[in-house]
Amino acid sequence: MHPTIRELSPQEADALGGLMVRAYSGLAGFPSPSEQPGYYQMLRDIGSFAERPGATILVAVSPNAELLGGVVYFGDMSQYGSGGAATSETDASGMRLLGVDPRFRHCGVGKALTEACIELARKSGRAQVILHTTKAMQVAWNLYEKLGFVRSEDLDFHQQELPVFGFRLKLR
Image (cartoon, rainbow, N blue to C red; front, side, top):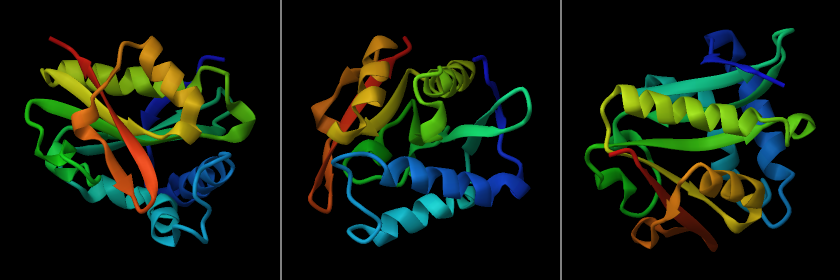
């Protein structure tokens, strides 16, 4: 499948929020909505990231316009909003909240969204792309490593009890 990657339209925000909740709540080993209600509220409200300076919400859509997944790209790391040291990084872009509809996993959607973020960072002249993932997101973890991201322990943090692992992709 070759999804089309484009910016989220405002009328798709609720649908993408629902997709994100389904994607994350279905991950074995990831906290449930009852364990981290604030995190899942953020996922439901993913459209609000579009209000942050330098942030762009990208979606992957099928040829028949079905929403397949999404991600938030940050051209300004001060808006990244994670724990740890990532928000103080300079000359970097970030990506957060990559989610793929469970029905379309292993179809290249996550890779297409990640590559779109890398391309935005390159066009902006950034030196690197930063992201975070968890052990529960092993499919994404493997994808990131295949695309050249390397572990960066200085970016690690805990989201309540959940260890969150930082990665960097050097662009220059």
